[in-house]
Amino acid sequence: MTREEGMSEDQRPASLHMMAARRTRRVFLTICGSSLAALATGRRATGDDSYPSRPIHIIVPFSAGGATDVLARLIGEELRKRWNQPVVIENRVGASGNIGAAAVAKAAPDGYTLLMGAIGTNAVNAALFDNMPYDTATAFAPVTQVASLPMVVVLHPSVPIGSVAELAAHVKEKPGALTHGAAGKGASQHLASLLFETLTGGKFLQVFYRGAAALVPDLLTGRINLTFGDMASLMPYVTSGQIRAIAVTTKRRSPQLPDIPTVAEAGVPGYEATAWYGVFAPAGTPPSIVAKLRDVIANILREPRVAASLLTFGAAPVGSTPDEFRAFVLSEMKRWGKIVRGADVKAD
Image 1 (spheres, one colour):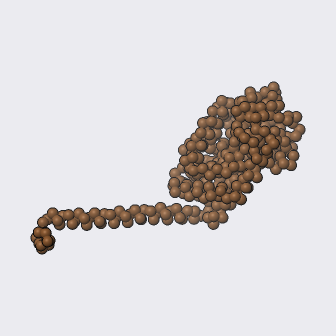
Image 2: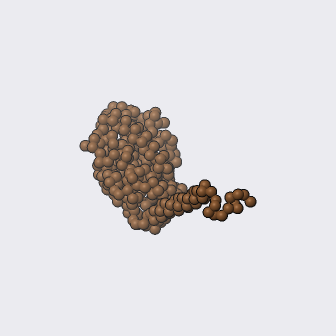
Image 3: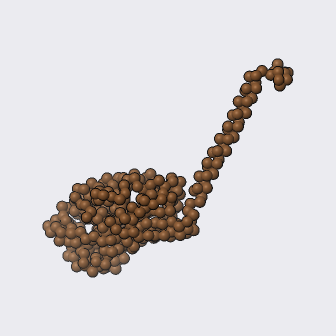
């Protein structure tokens, strides 16, 4: 038995009492800290689990029927099935997509208003417009890139041009003689044609519409000569023979049109243009909600039937992380901004 053990409680040195008090305080603080951490974790879990608890609105900044709209409706329907909440698709058209995009930029950052963005609204318009209603680089929280989509160069059958080489020669020799349709300034069709002009030294007469679907009737009747258009809108008419495809805009040939060459291999080296689409939330949306949205959309894109649906119009599913998507958007802003400024193109 030690000397201290043989003493009564009152006889023990004060140092032992102090040591016991410190041990008790440490245990108390540890328990409190664990409880607070558990409480905080519980709050986060509850917040994540409760989203979504009401209808979600996906804003499409272009008209119904185009690739942006088709993808928004596909993703919206799958979200509805998984979350048992209504998903409302709203087409807010105008100003090359700026009206719809601005509505999302100004919305509450709570995950209930989303943008199905595209190359124009989220990469190009900053170079196209002197006065933007939102800051492209900071107004949104990128969620995920949904898909990339090849474009196809199509002409009305009455146009006596059968190849990319002939098209390049024609627009160089007779600048402005051929009318090209695009879904607004800075839309993917416009950008693809600008790149063609830049590399060939030619010129189209641009005709702008309120969305990709709106230009199709004029293309089918020959009121415009051609478009560098998205496959989602044009494949049915290519298949039926109502319009003629002479090239795809991607680096490699499309599985949907294996006999159609790329623009680069058919006479314009270095040419490559791909339309892309992705989901954005307003800046300031909680990272937990952004992550939840990204995860469910990535799972949707991995569904075989969804991938098969995308493949019917040439789209390739992506499902990138928010950080990957942000880096991609910034790189696209730099690339296409340089082309737009080089062509001295400005919105009216």
